[in-house]
Image 1 (cartoon, rainbow, N blue to C red):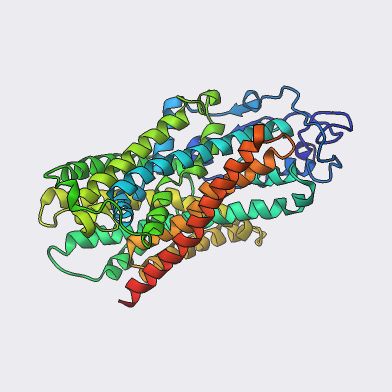
Image 2 (cartoon, rainbow, N blue to C red):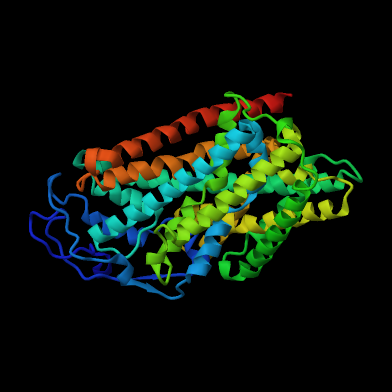
Length: 487
């Protein structure tokens, strides 16, 4: 029980968190590949109980006492700036980049060009908001680090008194959307691999895409029975190499014999613009890895800032997304498909090799994405069993069931572009555009929002933008799915 006492220093009754005392317990964090999937920690959440029932008034003074959370982190394997940059790029670049030409088709060439840069700037700003709120709450709670769901919980617990009862609900909502997002990613990965393999084999023999999904199911289950990410490090390395090589060759195809810009639409239509939003926000959705990466840096002060790791990585990501979307749509026009690899010529040996490489890379990357939903659900399922054998059996069955569930979703929704847009509109917009403004509003409720309350108005504007994308993007994506399914 002594380890679970509130990590708050003694203060007088007028302090924000009331009169409490304890020593600071440093956090021993694991390497980034492990922390990326540690989205929910029950032990670390115990500290937040200090905020509830503290008895302070809304205008009480905050106890910051010069506490710097980055000086109290004890890391077994801290990452360098370059390591963090690589992990940030890997966390943001996936199937979304290959879907950007389809996003430009739904927006138009110039609308997509400007819109992608604006979307990248907003998403990057929301990542900074989350990091700043984490630092503020860590100082307030005398805690070395917090993850996404803990930040949401703490912002409510230390915010308006009338809303503190919803702190646990806020934590559950963030955890639920993280689960939905990663399950959606896994479904997209499943379908992506099947469609690319089908595109290669169709040159020789046409088979229904569901046959490929069935053939992939058993290898996918076996690969995802591996529970220790340490053994999957070579798999991740191979996937990264294949992705880089595949993207480079795909670029060479896109840039060859480009048509004139007048051959494509500068603006598509208002009806398809929500589909663009969903695909673009899906591609930029890397906010779930931001806090784990910052928490495990050797020099976390280098993460933020104008030339910090976060801005550097997101500028690279935005440039890659913009260039792939622009040149991919310019090259193939309205004939562009849900993944740009599906537009590469079928009879060309190099293009066939690219499709196979990208299919293998995404197949191997499925496991890392799958670890997040498993890590969320597995502790709850295993808690219902008393013996270690029962827990192991339950964990194995859970993995089989979840992989099969993503397989069934991929089987029911063959439209890759529409499902990417749906996942982006539903879960990515909630995590990347709606949650950070709400967290910042509650975090700085007792601190202030600056001159003319500019922070409050800015957060409201971003939140409205995210909500509009959530509602209209989800609606249009569902209509697109059902329309093509009935066709």
